[in-house]
Amino acid sequence: MSDAAPQVSNAPARGAPAEAESYRVSVVVPVFNSADTLEELVGGLQDALAGRYALEVVLVNDGSADASGTVCRDLAARHAWVRFVDLARNFGEHNAVMAGLTYASGDCAVVIDDDLQNPPGEVVKLVEKLREGHDVVFARYDRKHHSGLRNLGSRFNNAAASLLLQKERDLYLSSFKALNRFLIDEVTRYDGPYPYVDGLILRVTRRYATVLVEHRPRPRGRSNYTLARLLALWLDMFTNFSILPLRVASLLGLAFSATGFVLAVVFALERLRNPDLPTGWASIAVILLVVSGVQLFALGVIGEYVGRLFLKDNGSPMFVARETVNCDPSPRS
Image (cartoon, rainbow, N blue to C red; front, side, top):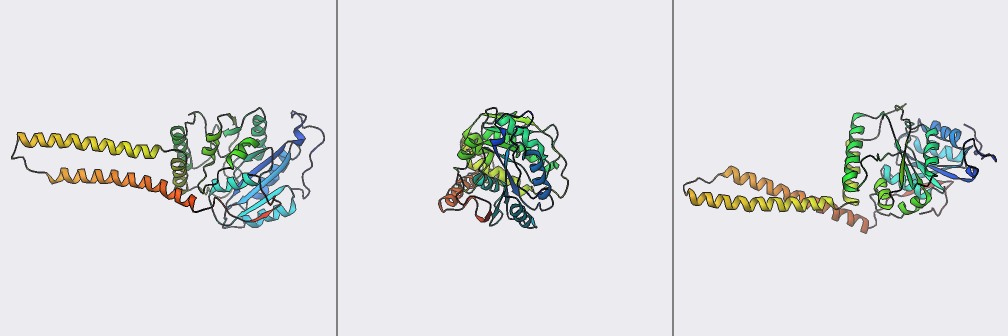
């Protein structure tokens, strides 16, 4: 990889519009324990994009335990077009993406993972589709080379998004996506501690498109997604962008109240018909357990909403940047 900042050619790239050399593309990379892949990723982005657009790469280190921060800092020191944002601790992937979008200065931003499963050259497909007038373009795949748990989590996440966010069922919410400047500015208005980027996007716009791209096997290491991370992501979607869980809790309470009333009438009539009928402790125990379970479920859902409101009200941050390199001290938001 050359040490010089990529120069934009005066002539437009083949197949690109005449103004392509002035179009600024920010590539946001949430980084977590990926020291071994960052050099190759940034080099691939430079090779694929630097002659076509004005390139900016925003590396956001999300509290990595390996040497990722050092590699990011070295890349930013060698290349003026590489921005580095070092978060004070691990805030989570979506928080890191929001940090990158906050510091991105391009006409559009492409979010790409740090594991090289999305080839850097595929960024061009997303950007060119975005320039047709869409607010966001999501990648889609013929085949995904993720683990079974990750694929199962993705399918559940998309099904839940269709229910909670009124997402069209044929839209796959990929982490590899491109956003225009209008959408970046709207999404980064959110200041709560629990961002869900796709939820923020769908809350703003329905002008989206999809592009078929390649998905490669992970060349090194293993996925950082765990069951706990997937559950946390689903919880962010459930409680931040929908009141459906509260309605479900209310409906369950009504359903069991109605059931209890009906059973009370049935038991009373049965007692009148057969006074010698023995009282059954099993039925009482079952009813108490079921009703108590519904009550605890409802209280838990309400508590989750109240707790998140409390954390937002007391100023819990979405992210805290310990250090920035090559970044505007007053990022766009």
